[in-house]
Length: 476
Figure 1 (spheres, helix red, strand yellow):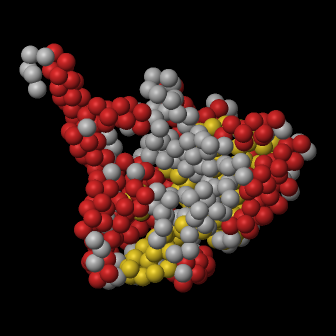
Figure 2 (cartoon, helix red, strand yellow):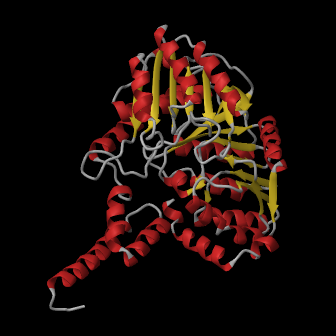
Figure 3 (cartoon, rainbow, N blue to C red):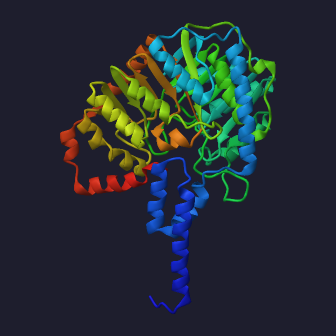
């Protein structure tokens, strides 16, 4: 380099200025692992890293959205208080050793544990579409739907047709889709639904900094449906055909619920709708306080940028630490932070049966490489790893001691733990745990057990690629 040439000197000064600025700015991030990753890339690739950080890395939302977050928190708190004090929404008696879990969930998402719920498992992909269409056709007042992906395909067409028929007969229909997740279909889906009287909003629209939009890596990943405030759906399934564009067949799990806990699903939808549209949904028909529909105790775990406390990660870690007999995790994307990594290894080493059910195939090559970098550590600690071989196991659920189950949209990665808006139902009942165990056994029947010996025989290049991909883990 010619030190008298101003262009190389200016370039060098720019790179070091970026490194110093990133050192100051990035260390304010929520996750130390994430901060270290940004700084590592800033050290070697300062200019590309800085550009990407401006698009997808800034921890703050625009000012107007932060104000609406605060207003949304007030609405959520008000709804949670109304639910907690309703004479039809009674707190059930749970075992003393489960009370701390119910309090933890309530501290994270404000919603109390409620009894009197009916909960039905819907593990069949097409069966979910069939039942949802049937319930939409029977709606008498409103249909509220939130989904990460709403595709303009055969499955999407069935749901859109049901919504349009409902709107035509006077039903109040609202659909909230994630702007990034539904990017390929958002225009056509929005145009068709709005033309028939269905209100549609896009969650977290993306734009470059300074244009009043949100950073690209904050997404609304929830999958929630509420019909007449009495029937709810929650789980992992998007509105898209079973066979993805990658060619993989998606395996999902959805819960159909009735009872008081549906009001908690409704509260989250109304808060999300307010966040995007500024419209307060407070008609009494949205929150009907009816009698119990079943016998199960459940509460909603909602997390995301509109919640002031940390995401769902601390709860998962606490549940693993509190496990006495068994922990079974099912997730398509598994990139644990350090606290979850140590919790799972420690649980296995103290004699808890720890099982992780993952997909052999992945629809993201980088995520697939990164998550495989953890296998050796877990296997060495006595954690059992099973690889589902019949497509993409996209279901997301956790079982602790056959007493607590968590089913919803939450992946076991840092994006779901600390960034995305997520929703899962936490159930405290042995019968529900048995139903989930049966679903887990069906998945295990078509999974391969990964052995430590076989894993150690992988090639040096595979190991190197996985370890490099792991560096991206906090950003995935």
